[in-house]
Image 1 (cartoon, rainbow, N blue to C red):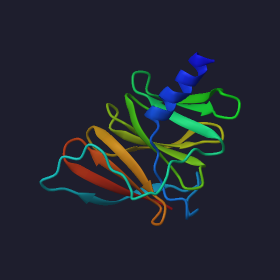
Image 2: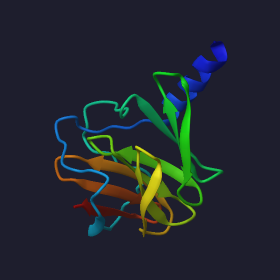
Image 3: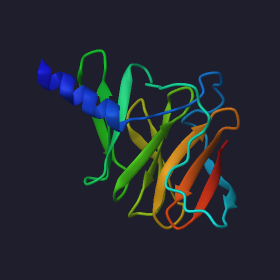
Length: 160
């Protein structure tokens, strides 16, 4: 019992997923496209929307596994591991759409962002985003995904 509790606690501590709960404008069926790049005297390591809470979609939690380059799901109802999928080299940070149907994952070594459908953990899209993407957030009011790049920029993607 203690081992299961520790596993859930570990996954919970690795999955800080903030997103506003008021909107349902994006789904796994939309495509991402670059909207804007922010540069200047910045050194972003993470980006986050001004969300108001922690989200787990459909009683699932999600975690990135950096060494294997995978994203895994955890069934909170049955307290057991769900499916996992390889997204790229060094899966780093993740965000979730407001309706819980899509995960957005940055892959640090692959220089990519992956969009994953949560219902079957299938990678729907991989996009080259920048050198060493390190942070990601999803902003539900605008349906945009923001990616922090280690080299000093922030990329903004539409999900329409």
